[in-house]
Image (spheres, rainbow, N blue to C red):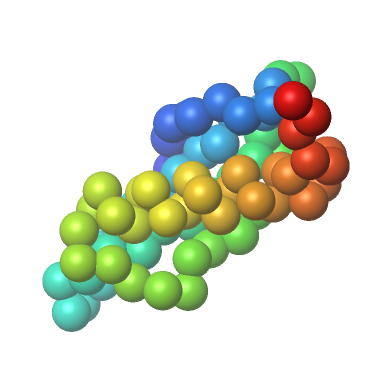
Length: 76
């Protein structure tokens, strides 16, 4: 399963794999990758979504939450 780099957040890359399920809904899995290429975290969205875009957006949000949990909150 190939993951495609789709976003950067706090210096880490979010890589997604989105796929269509038998019921014509979509799911995404994601990896969080350091700049040296090491995968630091991987997970999959257990929910399914009616469009590929919604599945991607939700997985990116989940990945950002995971990065925040790993690195601490962003200070403004």
